[in-house]
Amino acid sequence: MDHVQGLKCMICGAEYGVDEVMYVCPKHGDEGILDVIYDYGLIGQRLTREKLAADPTGSIWRYKPLLPVKADSPVPPLQVGWTPLYQARRLAEQLGLQHLWVKDDGRNPTASFKDRASAVGVVKAMELGWDIITAASTGNAASSLSGLSASVGIKNMIFVPETAPQAKIAQLLVFGATVIAVKGTYDQAFDLCLAATKEYGWYCRNTAYNPYLSEGKKTAALEVCEQLGWDAPDRIFVSVGDGCIIGGLWKGLKDLVALGFIEKMPRLMGVQAEGSAVLHAAWQKGTEEIKPIVPHTLADSISVGIPRDRLKALRAVRDTEGEYITVSDDEILEAMRVLARGAAVFGEPAGVTGFAGLQKMVRQGRISPKERIVVLVTGNGLKDVGSAIKASGAPYLIEPSLDDLKSLMGKLTRSWN
Ligand SMILES: *Cc1c(COP(=O)(O)O)cnc(C)c1O
Ligand SMILES: [Zn+2]
Image (cartoon, rainbow, N blue to C red; front, side, top):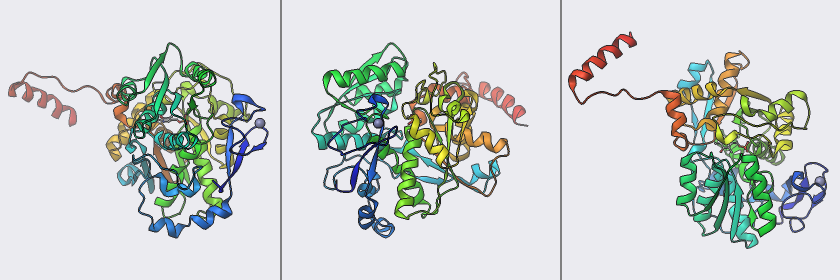
């Protein structure tokens, strides 16, 4: 890992060698999130746009020289990342935009963006010789970890709030994780998991605690820019809970600027659910202090009362001259329908929240039609079919008779006209 210079505290700026600390800045405890520092001169010799163009690797590992892993470390066999970036022409037209792309990260092996982070987490665990990984999660981080772990034979201890959706729990169980459902919130499950990490000495995959995870998440920004021929978009819309994804995207973009692969920074647009908008509130006030809340939103993956990656998340938006936006649960459900019908990408509520933010800004007349816009869809809609049905209504129920069908068709045709 000669390309990794060290780990730098987001609070005090102290730097540590990778062998000196495992997770956080010793001076700042669990708050002292570390950022991985690279030697871009060295990376620039190993990774060029030309080499990438010739590289057939269809996963995040095409960027291995830019990830905090050893060059010869084995990687999980699953295809993580290199998800499609669709040009959504019909949807763009509907919104009055000229250039709109949708990146479907529901196409990852366990159907969410989290696989990018889990893949790196699992490689780090293998490098460091751990055989049990623990995580707290609203669902996707854990189900992703359990899938990636199953692919290499590592055990998992998983803490989820008991309210996590069934599909995500099913993934955990089927991949063989030990699942501990906590009678409490995600934030409480997170704290219990950190305590367990210290008590039992398991390797911890928690967002904003393990510094390597946002490095996995940054690969989405690398892909977007490469898929657009290194002509970076004007804005990237993404849903925000803990803030690890948006912080990771920012890191990826900074990497690309440092390497000279892109010229300008896209604006990062962080979209939060109204009932879970702690970062939005802090951003509006211009502070990095957060006020914890009890979150309420049907978008379970971004239902977070204490955003753990707040510094990276707030600086990502501030530094790129982006914005935080909030949307209601109804706007999220509407976004689910519009995106599915306009671009055939089916996202879970948190998966489409970035798009809900775009739709809202378009309605407010705050997006110019010429802007090049990328929307990240972070999780697949099959993760939470209850919300999908809530968004789109129930089927028509009839007797198995043509007469019943005819009377239904009569009503339908009248309503269509
Ligand atoms: C985790 C998650 C998010 C939010 O990511 P953060 O890093 O917590 O901000 C958004 N969408 C989905 C589907 C997720 O699983
Ligand atoms: Zn520190």
